[in-house]
Length: 332
Image (cartoon, rainbow, N blue to C red; front, top):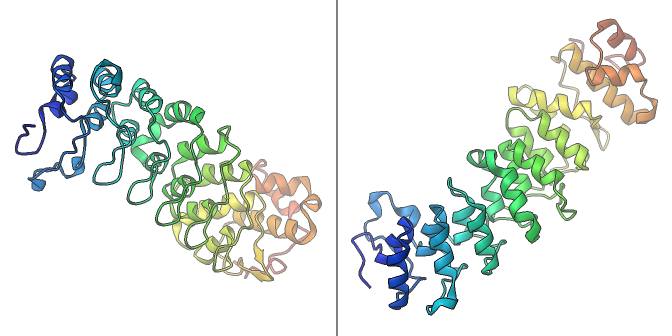
């Protein structure tokens, strides 16, 4: 088996360029379709291809005919194994799904050949963990439509205890969160916890533009009162560090959904005296709902908390039943 200085065989090169004539000749000659490339020159920028097979490079480059030929064991040669892993523990399916030349036909061909949709790499990540990266958000919907009929396990955890959902929340991947929350998969756990006990609602506070992610999670049924291993709810955790700029829209979104400011008798809103009037209104409405029940909140207060009314006098009337002092806020 001849290979160049980067350990790329003729079969590997033929699969990458989709030279089907050469590919067929090599396969009939008995070339090993599962030969894993090990570059002897790792400083040349090819480290990410360590352990790649001909099937992986064909899948990554969108070469459907080459993939079909490598997987077709009915033509007199041994078919390639779709579950061979590279140096990072990833399979050809992972290469196909994460490719910039994504091809639905290639993905379905691999799945028909027995590719493991739930394969986890050395870091414990599945293809769904990888899809939370920003570069893949434009095609997440298409990929979900292709993969969900095959019933993937969407609650698998990586080495840090993160599920695809918690990783997406931490990265602020709105498109991915929307896809996984609205997908017809009842087994998705919206309150899955990482190694620190944080749920997706805890983790989403670390990125900008979290309003939509919070709404998607809450409307999907995520628990607003889930506590991590330090006894902090998402709102309490954000209130503690409220003065950090990226937590402000997050706190606002949680209060809009009437998250409880008090946790086991402790009011974490005591330090929010620098809030603007809109935020104060939302905080007092949420606190009142916790103390007296959400049904006791007047309709005008609900509108104020949700910014449905632009009349500032309505805001004052709506929360007249609860002063700043009663809410545990220092005067601004």
